[in-house]
Length: 170
Image (cartoon, rainbow, N blue to C red; front, side):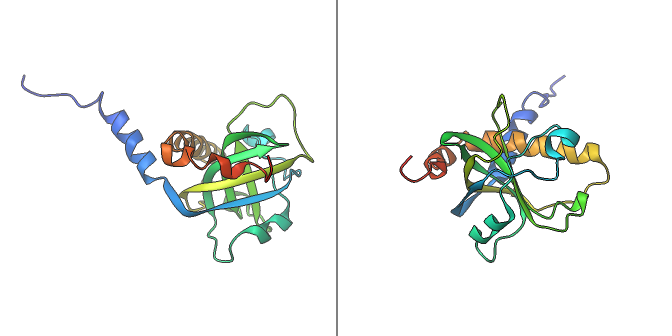
């Protein structure tokens, strides 16, 4: 009697807070390259395919770029832009010896596109790289990153940056 329940309000407040915590970058970064095969973990082990950029593409990042999980827009073979979330770094769970850029596009593709030209525009930052105590917690974090990225990219300030993923003259 007299008590109010906030259980129905809490999920929407949490979503708003998470989207608000997804930082917009003051200077979005655009990278391009040919989609290359990665370690083979994205689709097979994680169920989350990635369109990896070649190692040489790391030279396109500012020298002080921090590793972590970013989001933004991508075009592949001139098609898109599609929402994407990208890991830039060492993937601590797998103890990578090389730094990678591994975009996951939030779109269903019927076939792979190795060798296609990809252009990504990182417009927001989610979090630093983390290590995980198990594969299940890594997959859960990636799925949360995907959900948060998708919601953030629906915001007008990120939608306005979609054009950055378009190839010049495209």
